[in-house]
Image (cartoon, rainbow over all chains, first blue to last red):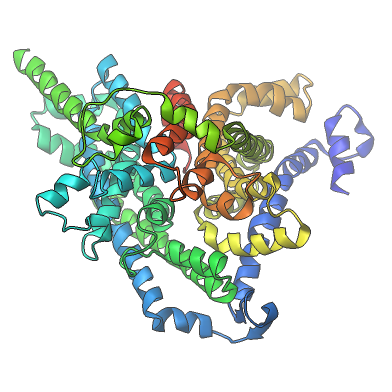
Length: 316
Length: 272
């Protein structure tokens, strides 16, 4: 099978195989790509397909001996009628939109501050990597401790001065979601800044010089020259963050566990609870599939928006 | 000239202030580990403390720290090696292929990266339970390799595509084998890409929490899971947690600091 043909490719001097060079090369490349493709199909696509299949069943490991009953689209309908699920869906969108917007705004400012080449900026850059590389569970725990009302570094004073209410921000139904959004912003703004900075540094210097020689002000240079050229990088940073923010799990799970009530519940947190704590496999699979659909949709919208912006800015 | 100096000074001051504010949570975590329990739980919080290694002694009594470290290391290295072995050749093949399906396959790998883990984790959990791998390091390595190998393939695809074909063509004309053109000619020139890929794989699997939380048991769990699982039980204070967090964050932060050139390079090429 495939392996024998790989053997003959390994020794091209042996002309016995009778294949032309271009064919042997094609086979060689296929042989290199096949292991990865097969692996991903078996270990990622196959479970994905199973997940789609399970989502049409009432399938609970803790109930009815784990028997499966076909229920059609009932699990998806429940996603809409179940107020907890609906809240999780809305929360996830709010979280993604707010977190990514703030991360982009702060990240762009940071990147512009760090643009100048030099030792000082390189050292600052290295320190900025710390929040990005710290284990997300630890990030969650740090903020949980800092915001604790009885002894937390911030929490105590916030409660003492009446800013957060006596039980603290993370236990407040109105403030918990903004707080977990801000934790995400703390964690990931440096990443956005790093990507944008890499984009800024790859801009052609002569164009910038020409613009300032033509008497363009700093703001004009930024708006008319830098921003249009930076668009692909902006796109990369936004798509990356939108996808990851939409899948947020660790920090929410650690800080609030989705509470108080359902106020910080996200699709991932709810799906994990349903699937791996209550073993409600059918419903949890439906949640997972909806999450995939939403991410695909967000990516498509982004691609369209960016293409339109690109046409407008660069006239292509 | 003077205005320029003033502007640089202004930029630097702003940066220092931002960084200082930014790193308060990290400094707090580090300092907590050296505080005696009495002072962590003082209300109002105290800012001065008498440093002690008490918390570090405690975590060695409470946890099998070496076993936790071993789990984290085995799982992240296993995932990284497997992902590189699968992903690097695939990235090369897709970059060099003249077929119009190559780009479709490349985008397929990129799409796999974006799949939320919950969608695959539940069926995968049942699968591992059925074949008896639940609770082993293999279960975590196998599922994390899907995402990471997809990531490595895409990243190496961009690195190889940026590499001119001339060198390989020349080597082939000189009688080099196809494998030799890949292994001895193309591969050495993309070493920065491989380092960047490895760095991201290690970071991703070392910090991973969701998959090992459900796929490992008490003997095979990594540091990230122990951190949370132990929290809330008796004898666990913020101090011991801070001390344990040293073990889970310092290796990865140091690695990123020393290799930050590759980190930044990887960010623009691939999709983390």
